[in-house]
Image (cartoon, rainbow, N blue to C red; front, side):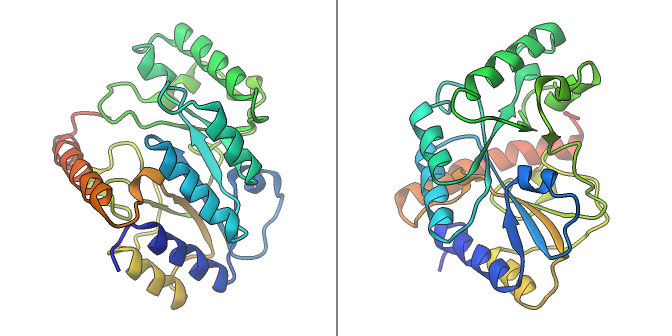
Length: 257
């Protein structure tokens, strides 16, 4: 079986369920005062390929799993019909903001841009949580907009960068089509004491089954990473590996912070 297919990701989720983990969207985590059991905050940053997003959302719903889907506001991603179907499947919707990068660092324009896009997204879901888009080739770090403004004033109760204690929670991301591959991760990373290498999805499943994953976890799985095996799978593999060459150079030489 090939890695980074929908089937392998489904196996990860089922292993977590069998291991006693409660899989939840980010807003549920924010609203729960105390969690006594094992849990996974399941998050999907929707960057490309909306058909992959629908396939992911349907697969999870079929297995009784709810997640948070963070949609960018760019024309290729902000499609009301797709957003509404993801909502109907029972998932949370959030805003995957990149306003500072789009507005070239102008904080006044950025916050107006943020408010406009948030209001538009709220036509389809009462958005309460947000997540910055890494914009890996931009010199602007989108979450730095909150050095000048307070997202709580816009009715937001949680930002994945600021409302999670990553000293207690193990963060796992598929950035660069690998799990926690720091050599190609520019902004999709957190400060954390957990140093658990994950070789591939099958290794992750073994870690889960052997009880070697912490009790508190966040998984960020981009739907556009996962494909059924075939030509599109191979083309996406080539595309991501090409991006990784550029990102590896940026990370190695510290060109973008």
